Image (cartoon, rainbow, N blue to C red; front, side, top):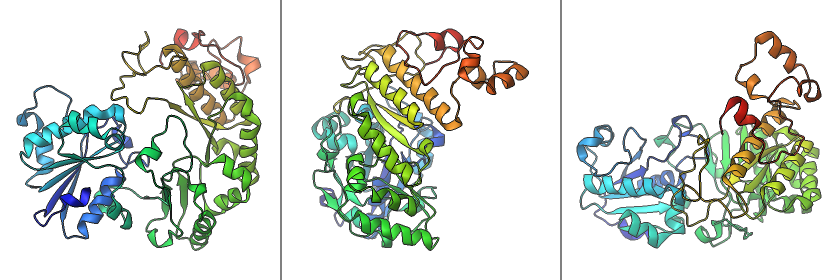
Length: 435
């Protein structure tokens, strides 16, 4: 238990986000903010404990053998003279375990004798393996209850939004998802209005519409929007389409509350398309633009490439975007997939499902990217030669004003999202290379 480590001898706590391979421009992105550490920071402050947050990058800590203090001058400068009595390290995906291990190793070297705790997703999914592999003193499983009762310490980061949970856990048991392992208890808040401190809100709920008090939550947001106290609302996870079908009035409330970029999931087979279309229609009827709607699709899993590609084509017919999610096993502690490998990779590099191949994975990712570009720009074909400005300007202007049927025999890499594309097509590599 986390509170067991907060003794009367703990006056200063160092909070650390490892050097995960997140682009610098995305470090404060809503998908990557270390919200758990911010909550713990606020919780510790209620106990008059001094906190310091450091967010590592590759300039601070590189994955090298034989850690030496002299190798990390930049990191030492960040830490200045801070002397912690306890260190808390967060973790995210299991396949980024090596970054957690390396961080713990450095901190053990730097602060010999100071207890190190590791929490977060990887720690909660694989607690025993995490403790042994990283060498930490203890793994903190799940959420820290006391930290759930405070407003996160946003002063430690540079963001203009806040993150809120109205629920913990999930009512579903979807294959490939570890939420119910990390948050086994289904908890719902009745009100969140007193938590609002910023105009932009990102909900981190796993299934926000399943909250039994969702109407009350949405009414609070609607009133706050009318009073100009909030301006932007988004749910990081998708909306449960089965609930939308039972309660279509929720879609109208979501629109009135100011939700942007709604997402739903299409985990089932192609033959379930009528149900998905109904969910999209409910959102469109509520006032959402179809091209702002996104459909989650899990690939490299039980449904093969042909099934996923058929679903992609259907999404283009509906003029909605796709959020593609590559499946990795919940106990996978490495993933060396490279989007730049033109000669392919194998299961030795990253997990490839028995129904998939490296070529199929790369092909589907390319298809989704081009599909989304066409949806966003309301065009019926994509060309990387045009996108990368490899066509003379005057000729490019003519192409951009033409449709697919007019350019398909003139533009060598013209790609139509309305067509099913086989895995073995190599047009994209042939003309522009890439992934």
